[in-house]
Amino acid sequence: MIISGKDIAAQLRSDMQQQVDAMFAEYGRTPNLVVIQVGDDPASSIYVRNKMRAAEFCHIRSQYLHLSGEITEKELCAQIEQLNNDDDVDGILVQLPLPAHIDEERIICAIHAEKDVDGFHPDNAASLWLHQPLQTNHIASIYNPVPDYGCTIACTPKGILSLLASTGVELDGKRAVVVGRSPIVGKPMAKLLMDRQCTVTIAHSHTRDLPAVCREADILIAAVGKPKLITADCIKPGAIVIDVGINRLADGSLSGDVDFEACKDIASFISPVPGGVGPMTVTMLMQNTIDCYKRRQMKVN
Ligand code: NAD
Image 1: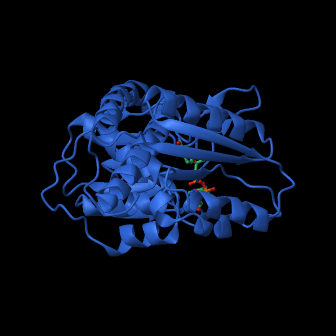
Image 2: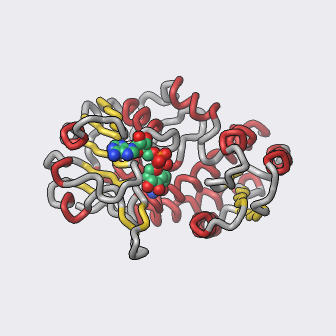
């Protein structure tokens, strides 16, 4: 069965519209997201446009700050600091990648953790790794895929847990394999699955016999960036397969990390590319903006 991230994202975004309208009725203010783009990378422009559109749909205010590719790291940090101190701003997102002369890690750290809607700030990453979720009796649903960690969780893995919840399959005790160990997808994904009582393996570029490792998986998450790396011999019959990869092919089309056609009849559930994880990532960005707003609002009241 195909897991349509596009349909689930649409459902979630309609729900968020109502959440935001209710928050406006209560507090007289809507969440406010500032999206910063440095330079004119065409792929970044598309991502930024999608995020702004999603915000508009969810009735979240958004501001687009398009800065010159020549801006210095110091100037960018100063801009971020101004937004950190602006009470009317709930979320700050700096679209990556940044030009080579700017240190991305330093910029991620410059955003106040409370306004870090991407969940990349070390305080947020550390909270995910060091803490157990606050609600131990959490029941996962597409609307509420992760328990409260008291911090912002990276959008892509959070969205994947929502896709997994949509299958209705119990995760407790399952074997999960996450292919890829990046700080924004693979690593947080592994921790979230571990907290859902899965037994987790992280595979990476040095893993030997990747197909054999993947075949152990009841839940297989591919986050590599290599088109069709995951072939039919990587799939255990009945596994749930989530494809995070976005790879632009020479003919201009998009491919995931999974050979979809070869794997779709072996898996019980599989997410496509496009229309799988991508729309969920943007949707979770909206949810994170709402959650940052709520946390800040609770501090004020
Ligand atoms: P990354 O480049 O930071 O990490 C890639 C990982 O893949 C590394 O940990 C590396 O060890 C592993 N790897 C490389 N070659 C491998 C191999 N042959 N076998 C096993 N593992 C291998 O990438 P990332 O930022 O995590 O992104 C991964 C992919 O997911 C990219 O295609 C990216 O565009 C996509 N992505 C999609 C979304 C979305 O919303 N759909 C979000 C983030 C990233």
